[in-house]
Amino acid sequence: MVKTKSLGYRAGMALIYAALALIALFCVIPFIHVIAASLSTPEYLASAGFILWPVQFSLDTYRYIFSTSTVFHALGNTVFITICGTIVNMVMTVLMAYPLAHNYLPGKKVINFLVVFTMMFSGGMIPNYIIVRGLNLINSYWSVILPGAINAFNLIVLRNFFAQIPPSLEESARMDGCSEFRILLQIILPLSMASLATITLFYAVAHWNQFQQPLLYLNDSEKWPIQILLRQMVILASGAGLGDSGAMEESYVVPQQSVRMAVIVVSTVPILIVYPFLQKYFTKGVMVGSVKG
Image (cartoon, rainbow, N blue to C red; front, side, top):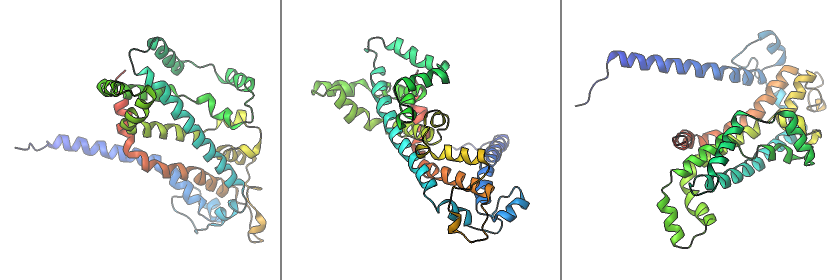
């Protein structure tokens, strides 16, 4: 016999869902405003203030910012850093997490302690800059990729996931003559797709939103990612030079606020498109890898 849920329980769940929906709405509203502002006519945007719907729909701002290669070039730099950085992250994290998942590794406790220690304490900005400069990485894409090659939290999640895979699978493979590297590639990784997809998403989002490291290490404007380009626009308080005014009508005036909003949309949408493809692995990957310490 199926028990019916009490009125108090259903009322409590309704309140929880309502609260979650309200919080989600507050998170989404700013992004809706940015999209609406980027699609509005600048004249009406200045008088309308905060809007959630385009006022006099116009694509002129997008036509302006895409009339030159500046935004495309910055997006290309961001995509390059994200793809290369994520590949380096995943390779390094997997190669370190796999041996740490085994109790027979000499010095495992010491290494684990050092990994956890870095989560609480770090050298700071100046020591990191000195190291990067000492390695002659200044103004190189590697300066924004190598310093964060392994994230301690992601390493621990993946290590815990590897540790939960039955040891009998590895023992059987060793009896068949498989090397450790082959066991990792053909047995461990195929069984860890949920955690691998989740950590890949973590790394990719971190690289896409990277701001401080490119600001410190990349002096050449040709290598700037989209986040640094957006910063320059905010500092200069102008969208002039971002696009080609000659490609627009003679009466066209560069709309500062609309250009900023449009660049924010352009810099955010690509990474949002990736998320739905990995979302189904997200909860499972984090929870399974966080059970064991």
